View 1 (cartoon, rainbow, N blue to C red):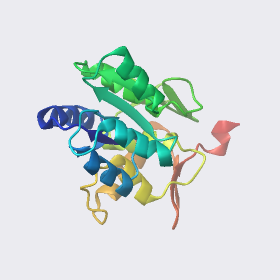
View 2 (cartoon, rainbow, N blue to C red; view 1 turned 60 degrees about the vertical axis):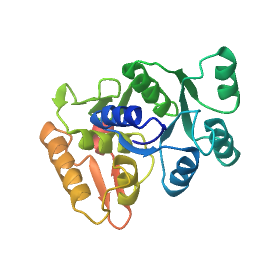
View 3 (cartoon, helix red, strand yellow; view 1 turned 90 degrees about the horizontal axis):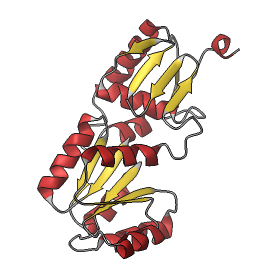
Length: 228
């Protein structure tokens, strides 16, 4: 999943981004409101973490401008404004959640996780497809009762595909949501990770779960005999 972190305190931004990257998220950083809107307009993010006290353009104005065009985009306010009125105002303006500073990183990650699965049709912390099962809280994968050990990037790719099993996902979309914006789209990194992920799933017993539809993209699909 790809996140946009909007925080003007650069040390704090660096620490949050590092922690989220270690959890497998792709993170772009913006340090003022205008940069946040510019990046939002250029890229397809799954969620924005938004500070309110920003240079150039206040975070509340960023929130309002995004909500004028997109009612569904997930926005989590992370702010030192901690009065009840501040929280009510942020939620009324359209944020999906509001976390005040100082905060525990584990709580931030839990709230991000909760927002990202809010539209899922599976149980609260699990994604399933045939023998495959992902625990999104523990970030663990099983094939039947067998644990499948994946790298952070492999996990991110599989989780994204499992949240969109209803359609084919292009390579460009997978790259957009699994890597930050610095990746070279013409590198072999994406194909290497897809190959490695497919090999690990095949070896664990989830053979042929990742389907390649030539010229269109990829999807996760359980073989018919496992669904019957």
